[in-house]
Length: 107
Length: 230
Image (cartoon, each protein chain N blue to C red):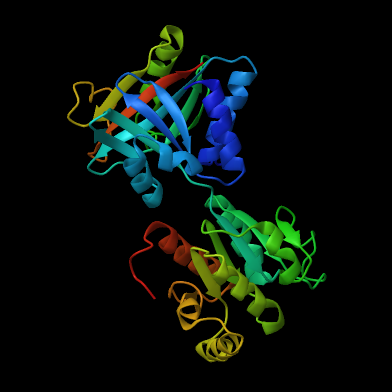
């Protein structure tokens, strides 16, 4: 089933209440063409399960990895992805835009 | 995000009330502002502007740098007419994120067998519509072709500021509808807001194609409200 924005946040709450450790990633800024608008959410648990999206699938893998870090440390992080990025050879946006993603723990 | 903020956020959304989450950058200190409390917030001007546009975004203010996440209620689609087009429109609109409700007093049409996964109310619009609390996050579509059903529903939708109001029927049918609504006291400005003939002009023929044309027009109104005015 395709997840709507509100389903993603409801899932975040349900996962947390069931005792899972959960992080929320949100697109906070975009430059150029970006696949998902500012405000888009991805919810991640400490097992690497996730729902929603912050890009068209290009950088979700990297965000999930960073989110597990945020769950461990409890400290929020801001991630930036773009083609000109030094990690572009690993993950990047093929559409040529740049996005900034804020990842926070749900506590 | 604190769990209590997330909980309130989900509860407000379920009650169809807009909220904004304010996150200080880069620190991460966070608070939730309900639409009714915006006026008394220190960032009231910025929050109001963001709420009006319905868009999330980063703002700079003398108080600091903040990320504002705007959570507007999910769009809804209310249809009069449990007809063939509705059987296609309801699932496509559901995919696009709309909560769909169909109203038709004719029980032969408004049967669960014809609409297995949709909320169908087998009542006259006068009875069915008021409890739905139609608002500006609602699109309304009249598909019965029957003035006894569609006219009252259209009047109700226009009075409740739906972001999209559309009615099935040819130009001739619509011209007669305009006369009836005007005679019933609906203002010319309100009548001019009705999209008829309904749907984007993509040459739609089958019920499913007409459903796509209607949803395309609703999307246009939702996403580009100021453009392509009719």
